[in-house]
Length: 308
Image 1 (cartoon, rainbow, N blue to C red):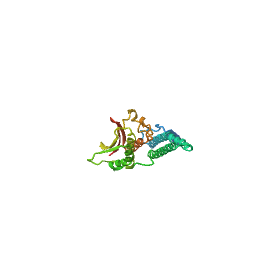
Image 2 (image 1 turned 90 degrees about the vertical axis):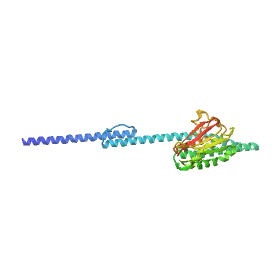
Image 3 (image 1 turned 30 degrees about the horizontal axis):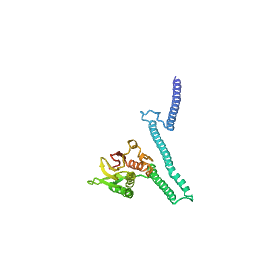
Image 4 (image 1 turned 120 degrees about the horizontal axis):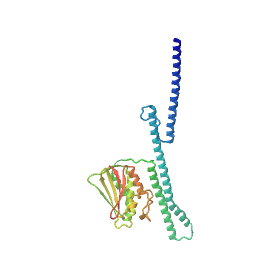
């Protein structure tokens, strides 16, 4: 009797060991399969629950980290796609802008090879070639500035600066051209308190110069050639505005004038390639500010806003 009991007990124990072994192998196989499914979600960059999120287990925590990695990789892919689209746009715009000056250089350089040219024709062709070279130089300089900003090769150093000093630097740079065009720049500032703001002095001077240059450039046919440059505090921002008398910009163009290479209907025959205001906007945005334009009775007010 005792031998039977011992034998039965041994058989029971052997059965339990075998059953636990089979269960252990089944459990491991299931976990491996679920881990394989989790890796599939990573490869496909899709978020799918494999392990219950409500359970506080190592596998659930692993799944949470995989989801974070998927989101980061999807974000990185989107950023890469946007960069590729931006590069394609720049190449397309650049090739379009290069066509005219390169065609002029090719055509008028051939004209200069003709021996029967008069002195007047010779000077005319040389002037056109010089203008084409200047346009190419201007285009290359501004494209370098824009590409350095957009690709992050340079970082704007935002620190406390006195606004008046930066504004006057821009005025100094535009003054010779304004004088040649017969423009008077009137500067207005709240004298009760000197305004300081957080910005990069050199790049902000570039942005203000572009607004002034735009006002001077289109002042040729203006009855009143006064340009009002104003600085004032506006809430949490400092507003630097340039008011011209050059006729107001149509409403349908206001959302487009800050785009790269865009030139309005009244820009025909004027110098420039449509990069100045775009660069101004980029400089403002990268400093936590923004730009705006609004019409007046006789012209427009372009403004850049900087954080105080």
